[in-house]
Image (cartoon, rainbow, N blue to C red; front, side, top):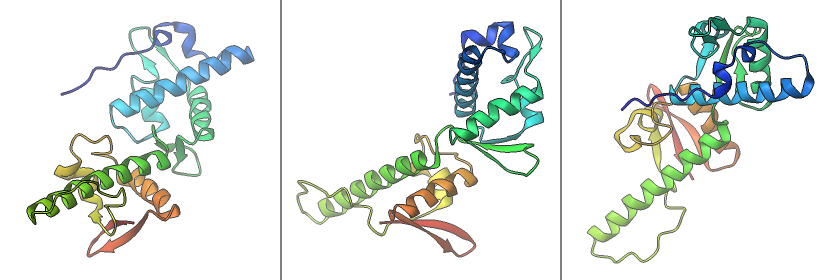
Length: 198
């Protein structure tokens, strides 16, 4: 089921497409642009693009108003997102970027919580099948669970999860954040990669 995107009121206001000279107004305008970019990319599950693609997309190009944010202004908005940890440049020329509507640590937390819930359900089901009554299961039920990257982003168990369909670059950053917290380890599995939760 496709969700429609609700454009903020500023998007229908022509001056929004020109960065304002007043410092206070500009800060509010940049905050609105950053919020718009993150919301738009989140809804469309868009994680990477070039600056030129961005300029031509409905995100920065309001066809109805016949207004387009100039490339220089788009660069300023994107740099603001980078400062907040929501964007990473993919090249030295700053012509393509990875947009992260959630920071890697936030994605990692969501994935780790999912792994905990999934393993607890599996563990409880196993104990019940053995005729044991389960009163309480430790939150560390995911110990030593291994998942492929494919299972995390495309598997049946992750359908309905926000990270289902997540691009591999963002997924790896999330798993690296978990690895730094000693909650997971990225491992090689045959031709691909996976993760082992602790």
